[in-house]
Amino acid sequence: MIQWNAEKDLWLQEHRAVSFQDIASCILSDNLVDMVENPSRGGQEAFVIRFRDYIWVVPFVLEKDDSIFLKTAYLSRKMNARFGGSHETKDRS
Image (cartoon, rainbow, N blue to C red; front, side):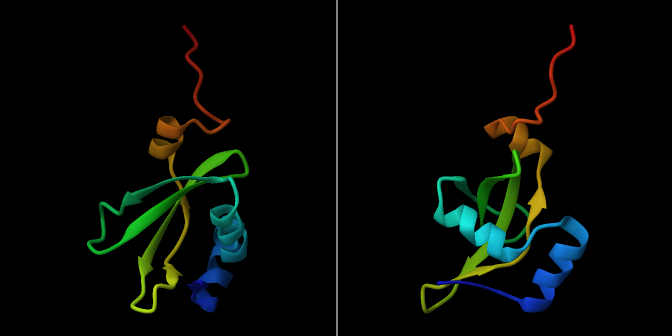
């Protein structure tokens, strides 16, 4: 089961034009690219997903009941360069 905070979901929709429902759909489809440790928060991991032709990072925690609690979502230039979204910077030389 994938869960999230409803207030955070509204904030993401307003400020980043993405919802946790969009993210959950990506995680459950072929748009999940990788899972990594969250470098800024101990005890968290992060999904790396492809959404709207760009790479997003979605930190989460695994709850005691084995459900996944999504914390937030953000675009990542670093991960986009690593995993190759379609908006990669092209070498102009």
